[in-house]
Length: 121
Length: 445
Image (tube, rainbow over the protein chains, first blue to last red):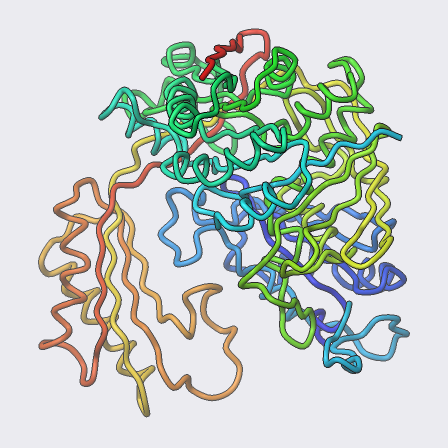
């Protein structure tokens, strides 16, 4: 499955550094995230974009990881030639990461819609 | 327990106006905060001030103030904003003028000054963040230097009776922390309290980003009525915990998931969120849904600040020229690639002086590079060529070379767009906090 099935994500920027959160839909899936979404895998998945190191911070209480990617924004938001100089769309690239099937998952999406058609994470 | 209700009326300079009016009119607020100053905004504002000594504040200041001042005045809601940008005093004078026009006699407006450290910094040997070299190495390329001020001067202005406080560069969460310090009597030495207040400010500072904006992903994360997105209200208790909510009936939603995305937004190390007044720690934060569109957040912590203030330095970075053209249907990608090759060769043949060039096929590889597309050829692609130059004239030539593809390039190209603009970059450094002295000016309408 893709990471997108079990987690959501938002990207922010500071200078030439990108900050990408990865948040489990169900906090009980934190261990699964922690095992498979490592700094090394994120660096490999975004190879060619990130030029510096990748640091991972863990927030088990809210079921989330926070990744800091140095040298990821083409010299910095303000001078980059890139179409998306803030790297805002990097969260979507990261959610395309493969997560091995076969392990128990608590919150997998998309869920069945509710009576009013909404799906509520 | 006593509560303070703080609303966020803007998450960036160009943000929507109506959600702020909605908050002012029916949000039952004690404070309405407008965060409008991105990293680069102040460098642009500084250039505007150079052209007009009475300018240099947020271009939407007047629109926003006219929209919310009457309701805020009637309901005794105080306003805090960094819309002063490069000229907080001129912004305060403008607000006073508007207040007089609206008949709001006696309205007190405070300007917080002192963030402009251009003269202090010029030629200094302070090292730059994230890059080699010192401030002095930037030479004449520096156009602005602004230190991130803390919440102290904002709290002081409120204590002096200001109904509107307008700052230049201040840490975004400080715009919220200032009112909380004032209301709850938190001292600058109470770092635990400042950590909790910073958490509140951080959650609210991007306005709609915590109420369902920048969150929707159909089928995975559905959000109702984003065209009428409600901006957030923080119901802050004296113990520093907050319930994040929004005006009933407005669009968007507040859930633990929307709050978590904003909690981690741009904070880098969650145990060390560096602020002028405190090093905040978000690692023990607890998030709990207490009702529809009501999420309680607590557990922010704080330690003493580093003693250094971040300074954003605006630098002249030359120019960027750009051109785009689209191809569609069978063979679109091949024609797009041919177009890029032609422009690449033309830029060399005609000697366009670009120090850096970029060739993208939008729809294929422009955002994350080649090799990520899966499946069949896209139905349409958009050619994009961008380059960095030392002069506007050279930058214009880049877009022109894309435009000439109309009659000289591959078949079926359409929809050319071109641009050339001056680039202001931002670099950062750190200065000792004691070298910056904030000051207050209070005007009365």
